[in-house]
Length: 102
Image (cartoon, rainbow, N blue to C red; front, side, top):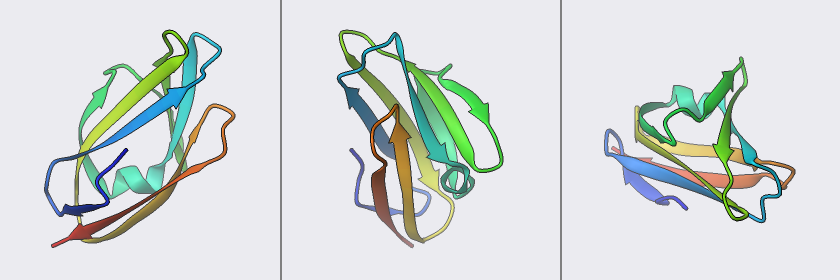
């Protein structure tokens, strides 16, 4: 879940929900290019970021009763289009396309 339209330097959130998790944690990958275009304000759960390489940030989120939630709260650094894919576990990528106004 995310706001399709937002403003530059406006606080917004990306809520990533995973249903049907079978293990104790779920791995969620977000492109590093997205993180480079935003000022990250908060990550919930706070200790979820486990690995950051040149192309990808990987979060491990606890799964309880088959579901897991990761919230990324951020402010875009520039206007334009934020267009990227999120990969959660073995699921196909989910596309995020957010238009950032000046």
